[in-house]
Length: 536
Image 1 (spheres, rainbow, N blue to C red):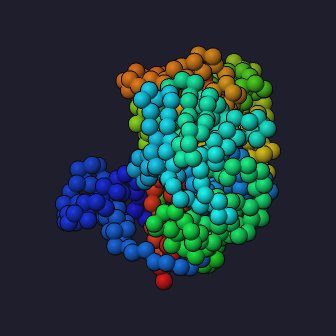
Image 2 (cartoon, rainbow, N blue to C red):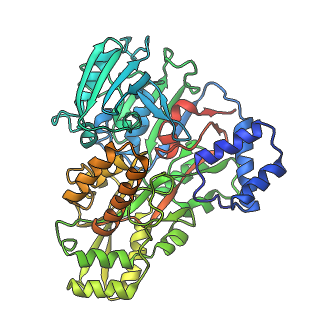
Image 3 (cartoon, rainbow, N blue to C red):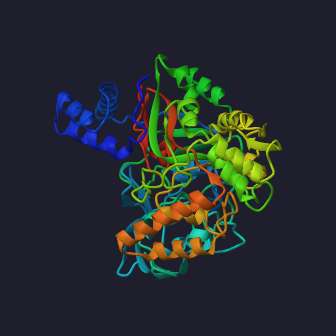
């Protein structure tokens, strides 16, 4: 299979498709791609992909069956508590946000008709009129006020509380107008409101055994940890509603089983397959790979508040031991980009390109392990198929450790219950983080002292203060400089090791049309059900 460049984005796809629509010749397109550093073979594949996208015409009807990689009995239809990709897929189908991010990462209005501010601190949200919930209720400002205020209620347990608490006032001005006042200026608010957690629910909703939203699908079946079925909403407010009659979403944690389900025709989409599984679909009729890079990653987390991570020499030793090139080439089959232990990927305009990744240096690693008094100690590495490619990464670490006298034990645990029983809890374990559109969101969720997903329990007053200051800066040069420094602090001080930014690979049937990249992650930022169709 010809490799697609790992830094290729949805914006690049859209640019090529636009040139095709304008009548550019194949020769001109190839010349343009090669001038950008794309090989002739990869350029041909990209042009085939773009030409297919341009030629496809949506068709109505059919039932799409798709499988994600992780689920649990804690699956939820409450957007505020959404944690897994399965939650995000369902929320995107059954609810809407005030805004959403398109394939190019540009903020578009969804339930909002407009969002405006003169000072980036006090915002006015005008809502679309005539939007209906699935139960027939008409959307109004009370629904938005209720939905956003839920994130501030500790009893709700919102996963976005640390982001939402900057909203100090959320009030109704009239039936279709909401005022949001922030504690400090934040020019990113329209982007923040595009996050999956900020879906709008009906005023007063407390029962999430089903979903009463405004989305393109209506929840028909919801069995946590098993499956969900949604049917097309006939009263959807967008002129072009869903193309599908219905879609069924399940999770198949075992990667090979997920791919085999696609090959046998049981499903149409196998999400986030292991790059090593691409050989299973190469040359197979009727299936293909949808590859995109948005900044997701699997990381090794070392808790700084418990042994062995309470000794910084152990953390520094691990960062020198990680063989990033081997993970990129062997584990990810080249479908990844070397990372530098911080979450802002090159796909983001605030990525710090001057922050070099730690070199693989076994002798330096050994020095730190000896200094920590841990050389030869048995250290469990908790991994699971739930955190994509983590088992393979753990094996690479184990092999590298054996060469310097470290005794790493790969503790492979089941996918079911991994996120509730091991992630954030085990002393040394793996995580899997989906892309987020702004550095501030990543920092607030993952690295602030009170972050809900602070994977290494990193705490720094300096970091917290700089994060808040950078959030409100309208001077882009100063803001960028601060974000670069914050990335350096994470890379050098936190206990999270991010070896590579992973290219997302969804394996799909060639009958599936309309699937595109999105900066919020694979499966079109988990919103694929509304936009894809099945060809006969």
